[in-house]
Amino acid sequence: MRLIRFILVLLTVGYIAADALAQEYRIFIHPTSRVLVYGSTNVNNFKFDYTEEITIDKPVKVNRQEGMLRLSGGYINLKVSAFDSGNGLMNKDFRKMLVEEENPFIQVELVSLSPKWLSDQAWLEGKADITININQIVKKYTVSCKVENPGSLLIFGRQRVQLTEFGLTPPVRMMGMVKVNDWVDIDFSLRFATDR
Image (cartoon, rainbow, N blue to C red; front, side, top):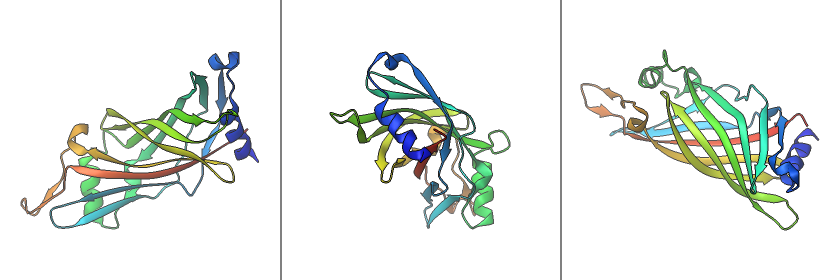
């Protein structure tokens, strides 16, 4: 019931003077949410699964402006140590590459939702603007979002990122014989609920 109320609030935050009025919500991420990282070397492919529960720790403000739902405080902190490939050596290389001691989290921020509004001020799908902060370098991306039945908000996508754009050096093993490619894919699906 709380989830349905949340979706209804997001669907009907009206054009009235509420365009400038921010609403604050405690948002929860459903346990079926997932984040995966896919990559490759010159000899094989690999995958890292995020193995801990994904959470948003603080209330999120939602403000409708010009048909867009702007979010403030929608930070998701993913522990670098919680990504697991099933291979201890690869895990160690991954954490070293991400300079885990200095940057223990990959931070994802939900910045805004751009719904495709229907005539009755409801929406079923749209786009979400997110930022990804790795190694203290922030990049902005646009991904898909939709309202699922029976009333869950899903933000999903597969975003290709270049490691060197985040100041990272892809690992090299076996005296240069095995090299990790500079591009990886972050695959995610995040389902949301609220306390209202």
